[in-house]
Amino acid sequence: MNAAKRPQVGLFATCLVDLFRPSVGFASVKLIEDAGCDVHVPVAQTCCGQPAYNSGDRADTREIAEQVIEAFEGFDFVVAPSGSCASMLKKHYPGLFAGDAAWEDRARKFSEKCHELVSFLADVMMVRNTGASLEGSVTYHDSCSGLRELGVREQPRKLLAQVRGADLKEMTDSDVCCGFGGTFCVKYSDISNAIVTKKVTNIDASGADMLLAGDLGCLMNMAGKLKRIGSKVEVRHVAEVLAGMTDKAPIAGGGK
Image 1 (cartoon, rainbow, N blue to C red):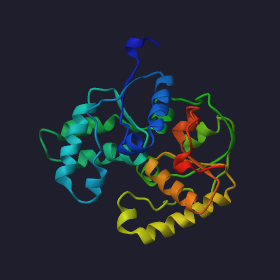
Image 2 (cartoon, rainbow, N blue to C red):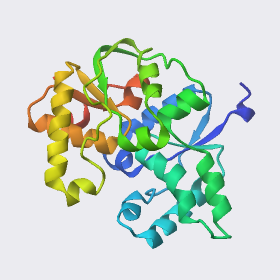
Image 3 (cartoon, helix red, strand yellow):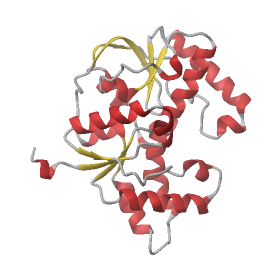
């Protein structure tokens, strides 16, 4: 492919990846570059605004969204290794600026080129095999925003099926919430704990060596609970496995 015609992708790294799991960002860059794109990581990027949005603070959310749009609208695509952040950019930004003559069209055009990482690879760049290998079994958790707002379900499973040596073991209720929900786990900690307790029971019952998902918030929530109950299941972002970058310690330091 002519380098001049390679799609230019802005990586929306996300707050949690930046602060807690940079390896997910590096894995994302590798996957996007291997798919035939050039990757850029604007230093001006910040939070997508979801915490403020979910708390009802539309004024601050709009201010954040304006900054994000200005930082990323020059790229062909905007990709986030997070279903919840990608959904915020793609599904909720247009509504923030509805009826605003100066921003409505900009927000709509911006949202149209925003994608969750795995769906971008599979649905836009038509990646069928990332060439990765992994000895062991994995189970996959469908994060709520990625599944219900963006339709991310089969894409990660199809790519994981091509990872040499990996055995996918589906857990019971893989599409049920893990109890994180951003600020939900803070506001309703007892309910959140009950939900994640049931989730990790299903994870352990799957018999898989490793838990994967596409949202770091969900993964940190489940990894923390698995560690507290003494489970040996490793927890990783799906991008790390698809990129063949599993040399870093698992999330929360769990695993065997």
